[in-house]
Image 1 (cartoon, rainbow, N blue to C red):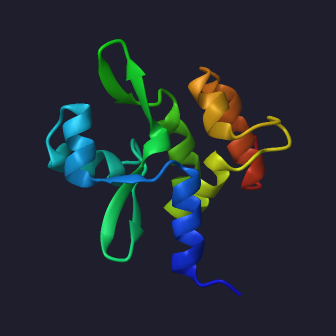
Image 2 (cartoon, rainbow, N blue to C red):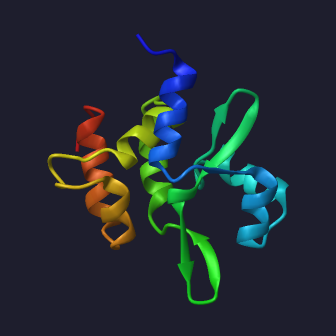
Length: 129
């Protein structure tokens, strides 16, 4: 049986790795405390590996000349948070191929189908419509 750190490291690698809080905040053009607030309010995904808070790269997209968080991600994160699911489970959902979507939910989310991904997340968690 693999330990959590091995599982988490592999999952984070699947997500393209992760940026530290300062690096991600710089990328978004906001102060680190503002990005930390986004994580706490489920508007950005942060995971803890060892003692480091990391933001998986998959949640960032280029929007013209700036980097943003994938539109619609906050709604999906709110579903997982409301169900009591942790950030690692959320990341596993986002990066794994989903049989309903026929690809990874993050890919569908980046294609602008936030409502669909949110509904699939609710089903994944066994929540009522």
